[in-house]
Image (cartoon, rainbow, N blue to C red; front, top):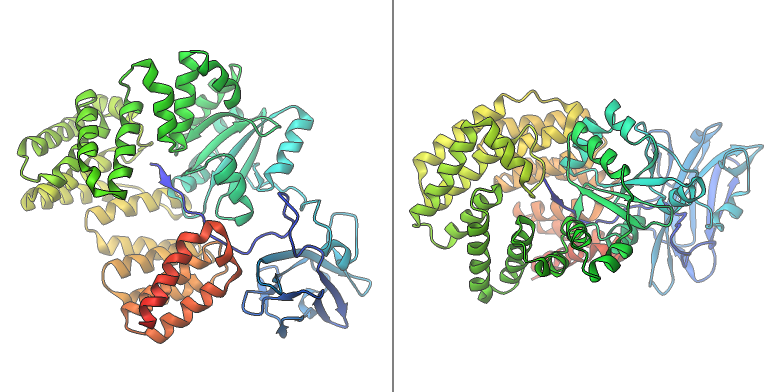
Amino acid sequence: MKTILIFVGSLVFSLNVLAARLSDGKVHLKLQNSKIVGNVDDGFHFNKDAPAAVQVGSETVEPIKKNPKELIFDASKAKDKVFMVNFYICDDKNTVCESHEYKYKIASGKLMAADGDVEKSASTVAGKKEKPESLKKNYHGFYQDHLPEVLKLAEKSNKLVLVDFWAPWCPSCLRLETEVFGEKIFATSTKKLIKASVNIDKPENYEIGKKKYGIKTIPTLIIMNGKGEELARLTDFKPAPALAQGLLDLQAKPLISTEELQRKAEAGDATARRALAERAFGALDYESVLKWLVPLKENSLMLVSAEVSLANNKYEANPNDKAEYQKALEKAIAAHPESLEAIGWRNEVLKWTPTMKEVAAKNTEQIQKLLESDSARAEVFAKTLLGDFTGFDKSELLSQMIDTYETSGDTKKLEETQAALKKEVSSYKLSTDRSGQALLAVYYMKRANMKTEVITWYEKLILAYPKSDVYYRKLASFYKEDKQPEKALPYAMKAADLQSDSALTNMLNLAKIYRDLQKNKEALEVTTKALDLPEANLAQNKKTVGSLEELKQSIVK
């Protein structure tokens, strides 16, 4: 199932491969006895309110002194070990606050950069940004981040790159990680490709992810050449056999860049138009979908889906556009009445006219037939553009039926369907080793009103991944939505305490829970602290920052 991505700020890796930064070269670190001492040039200062630490393995060492012009850390625990030092530097005009992170070791009584076999002084490496950290592969053979360097490697070796754009909170991303990437069939299908993994939560990946490649849903897999030109795009989770075969099929034919496809499409090539429409649909660029498909005069599922999505966006922005949205829904339902999409479209129609019994009856009749026929169900789910529901197809149908009965007000049928969904979900063989699958199951548990099971699984995931803020945040949000802020609080506090790319989101959630508990003083402290963080200045966090500012103003009033 497609997941709309959210870009959030974080502590970022300082060796920015995209562009030089204002604070690069302005910091100087040295070892004095058993202490690491940091100073900055005139015109700059350490952000004393932002995180700063020495990371030695799993242990975090906080600074013993932290003021705008000096940072001091106790380095006694870092002896004979490679360790990380991180902090934030701002210019005195406060136009930017930038994170810095360096890898060091102590040798011959000096602080040395841990850079392979080459050792440089700490002050030298702190001022040199043109070379990134050595490329590293994860246990599935994907280079982690640093995409520009991976592309250079690909161009040099004349290979194509398979790039996985993902985030740690995305269930479908986790499904690929735990159910697909480790499978032999996937490894075989990608043996001729260089594989790269790009975490879109990291601010240094914002320009690459959102602006250059238009990543709006995750997971998104893009095959590109060494120049970074997009040659193919796949979105959402797919089981290992299906994804492997799809990748082999793509590699078996000449892959064409988007620019070349555009030239062919503008010359009237229908195949090129369809290919561009598919790429645009995967990027949620519905206007481009219409641009390429409308001239073909084919009332395809992709075309009407794009029309519905555009009309819905307009309606949400301006309720006066309701008629246009209704018209798009009616056209889409008439064109593809037996599609999985049509069930959702009818449920939208029911929101306006819950008494339209014939619409509700059509939905329940269609869903019942699909539940009873494996072949019919497989055919419909194979054609849908909503995403891959492997292992969850019956649950999705029952969830859609719940929507129908909720909207039409049939309480008895609603309870019966929730019971059926509970039975279906209870049959799953879930494991914390497959966290993405477990998170999707939790979604259907919520739909079935299985509150105890939801809490149990979030707690299992917390125990399995105690250093991840994701599951603390999700359980806190669940308790909050269930109007139990007192139970949500400790989990929200833990999520906010963990160093995370979602720091602002976690702090916003914590502040809201404090407000729900009528602890306005604590809520105000959290919002103020969040807004003072350097990541609050990042463009990708504009929406979260807006929510924080709005919350702060409501508390002050």
